[in-house]
Length: 319
Ligand SMILES: NC(=O)c1ccc[n+]([C@@H]2O[C@H](COP(=O)([O-])OP(=O)(O)OC[C@H]3O[C@@H](n4cnc5c(N)ncnc54)[C@H](OP(=O)(O)O)[C@@H]3O)[C@@H](O)[C@H]2O)c1
Image (tube, rainbow, N blue to C red; front, side, top):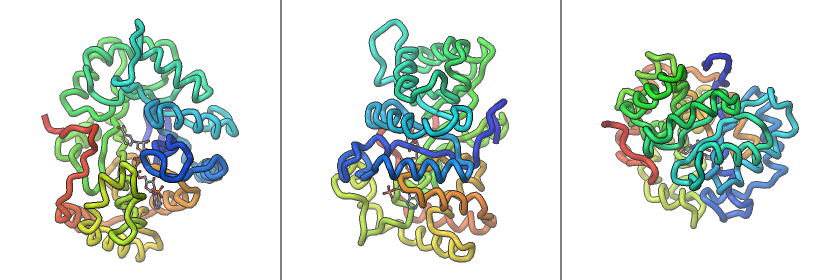
């Protein structure tokens, strides 16, 4: 998939969990990440050709951007792509809060431009979208996208940018086997028709669809993701069992097949990576070919689980 002059890898890498403090159990994910782990992970990703890193100022309130910037210093700047976000709720009170937030991100990431800059959510589309235009003109932002926007909001943002000769170049929404709201609302079709890449986030439902967690081995206690998913885990076993059995036939594991499903649906998954070995899974996922019967079976099992994994920050995409 390409955005004009920007070749997007098959899978993008997410770093929300990198914003955790580094102490096991402390943070949104409860991931005990060390700098050495993350450097090993980045080297593995780099070698495998996964070079697009997604972050946001609000992931650990700057911690994710800072550690990502430090880890990526080992590569030439044009060897990787950086994607970060303007979050309206975190805007300051100055004359141009978006430009200010971008400057902070650039400082933490140790760079003078980002490849993709997103408006994180559709709070006041008419107010914030035009603020992207001077950032594009300055060259500090190469490409722009919108996240968590419904179709009406996407079209409004596109119209505002279009008046200045720019466009919405990418969409980033929650999309997994368990949460297909963007597909139901016609956003995937819109992207396909307009040639806009759709970045799917939370394809693994923060680990609940990774096969690693189960009713017997729930997500780390005391974390936000445990609160969101642990009660659902008993209803997910039929689906994770099916992912496992498809995986066995292709020498792959549960998360690899879940990621392969998102690729087969024409999206670019952004996978939250916390261990170097997860990169090997992404390599396998890129090679898996699912049949239309397998896709239909997985989606039927996902529907039968009858769970709602909408994040607390998200709204339904219809409307
Ligand atoms: N725009 C937005 O509003 C928005 C919202 C959410 C996320 N995002 C972006 O999308 C990215 C992905 O979402 P996410 O990180 O929330 O969730 P995710 O990708 O659904 O799940 C990530 C978790 O799955 C587990 N995992 C990943 N690969 C695995 C593998 N191969 N085997 C076993 N377990 C695996 C890890 O858990 P363990 O660490 O426990 O092993 C990891 O923390 C974020 O990092 C962020 O960049 C954007």
